[in-house]
Amino acid sequence: MNLAAVVRCSLAAARVEGIDFDSAWDEALGALPHAATEDAGQAERRELECWEGALRWSRPFFRTAYLGEPESRRERAAGSIQELVA
Image (cartoon, rainbow, N blue to C red; front, side, top):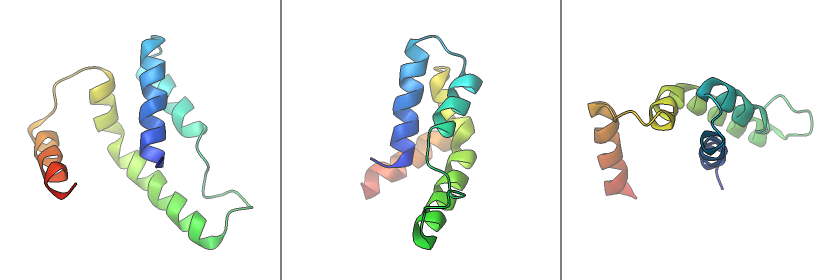
């Protein structure tokens, strides 16, 4: 399972428990492995850095979904593209 899926599952469980998004987000990301760990190899650190950046970038979209708000036009377009390449 990729790290975005792990975060999604963690957020889904937190939402069921009634935890606010910011707390749930911090907890979900805090539980992930981080690039700064000493036992990670160079390739693994690079991959983790990429995931950390991608997750930071996607935080607003996770928030929208968590709060049950409607998707923006841009999010719908990205979803359509993803369906085409999947």
